[in-house]
Image 1 (tube, helix red, strand yellow):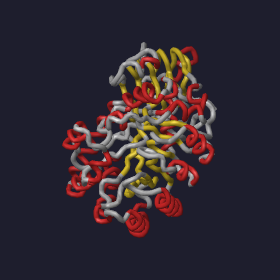
Image 2 (spheres, one colour; image 1 turned 180 degrees about the horizontal axis):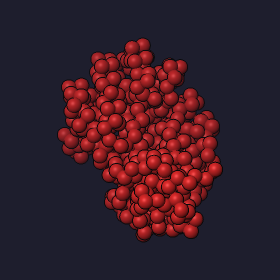
Image 3 (cartoon, one colour; image 1 turned 60 degrees about the vertical axis):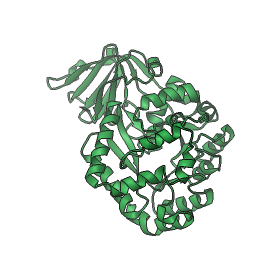
Image 4 (cartoon, one colour; image 1 turned 135 degrees about the vertical axis):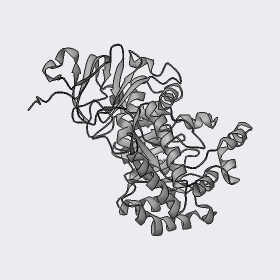
Length: 422
C-alpha cells in the first residue's frame, strides 16, 4: 500500500534525475543495457529517513506527503543522480611515495622500482611502523576527500602489511574509519598483494602462510579476498589455488589481473566465480567475451584508467570492445600511494571516455550500479529506486553530457548519504 507518512527529505525540480535503473535487475548492466537506463526530466527524489521513498517527474509528486518537518532541497538547473560507488581502493596505508614519483619521471618502470625494493614494499615498511592512530587519521582524511567527490560507498583493500599482525590492523583501522564518518566501507583482504619481504623469491610459500595462518583470522573482518596475479607477484596457478582456498572458507573473490601482461588471470578468476576482475589493461576483446561467458554475466571488469595515465603507459583497457563483447564494466580510481594517488572518480570517468571509448551514459553506469555489483552492494545502492539507501548527489550541471566534458572538475554541489545531507 502507498505510504501516507510525510517525506523526511525532498529533492525537487531537478533538471535531470539520472535513475541508473534499467533492465536487467538480476545482473550488472552489459552491452547496450549500459546506456539504456531511465532519465527523468524535471524530476524529484523523496526519502523516508535513510531510504528512497519515491522517484518521478514533478507532475507526479504527491504534495500531500510534504509535511512541516520535510527538508526540501531545490535542484533547479541541476542533475540529480545516485551516490558514486568506488569499487577498488587501497585506503589504509602509511606515508606516501612522492619520492618514487621522481624516479618514474626519469624513466624507471613500475616493475623496476618494485624489483629494487621500492613500490609496494616501500609502503609496507612505512605502514608496518605507523601507529593505528596515524593510519586512522590518514584514512579519515582520504575518506573526507572521497565524500567531497560524491563517493558514498567505498571498497577498501588491505595489502600494505604483508604479515598477519599488520594486515589485521589495516582491517581494524578500516572498520573504525567506517564508524567515524558517513561513507560506507566494504572490506577486501589483499594480503596477497606481493610476497611479504620475509618470503622474497618464495611466492607459493607466502600464499601457503596466508591460507594456514591469516585467512582464518580474517573471516568476519573482510568480505572479499583478492590476489595480484602478475609477473613479480603471483602466477596463475598459485593464484587459482589460493582463491579456491579462500572460496572454501566462505570469501567472495576478486583479482588484480592483466595489468601489465596477458597471463590469463581474469578468465581463471571468472571460472571460480569472482565478483570482479580488476585492471584488465592487457585483456583482449576475445578474452573479455570468454570472461563474460565464464562468469555467466555476473563478473564485472573493473577498469582503472588513472593508473596507466599516472604511470605514463600507453596501454589502456579496451573498454569499448569489452562492452561490445558483452562484458560488464565498472570504473574506479584504484586510489593508492604508488600508481594512483587520486580520489577523483570523475576524472577516472572522463579518462575512461577519452582513452577507453566509453560513452557518457556507459561511464555513469560504470561508477554507480555496475560498481555496486563489483562489491555485491547492488541491492541497496547504485540506482535511484524506492527501497534503496538514500545516497543522492546534486551536481552543478544541468545535463549529464557535461560530466565528462569539464575535465578534472568536481561537479558535486551536495551529497546525501543515508538520507542525511553530508
